[in-house]
Image 1: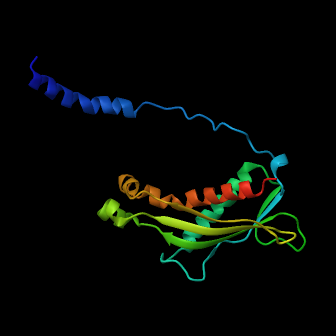
Image 2: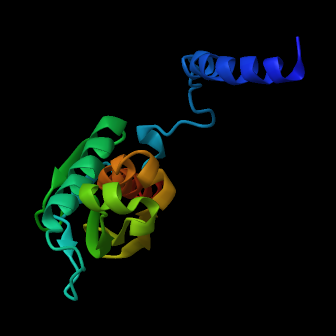
Image 3: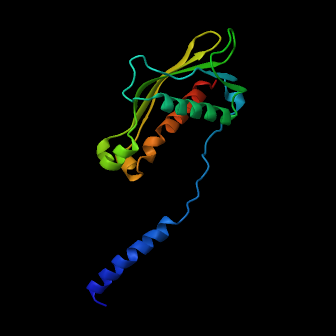
Length: 186
């Protein structure tokens, strides 16, 4: 067989080989390391105030939908953790013990599907940022404060036709919940 024939055969076989590799399943391993329990938590109740948009506003025209998605994801992750007796949306009654979570949207840019389709990676990256404070609900003392943010890779957004852009609020909501979990520890 000549070198030219081998090259042609290789080019014809490559798509079939790559399909076989793409179909291979990988098993995800469970996260290792110490697991948190209720005994590790300083607070047994978490009060999440409704997330707000910063007074200066954001460039996105309708941020409320994305803020609501991040908030519901945060609440869902905290509830599913099973580490708290209660996770409540709203401000606690006076003198209640617990952790008070305040989150303010300070930056938001979500690249739309049409823009991502036509411009691809040139449309830039999506970005979402919250300024979060954790306070002791009883005393009002500051427990922790941070900016929780996430952005997307423009090439990943182009490759997935905007799926990474659309999933950004859920990713940020999960990061917010993780910040709350670490802030609530003893």
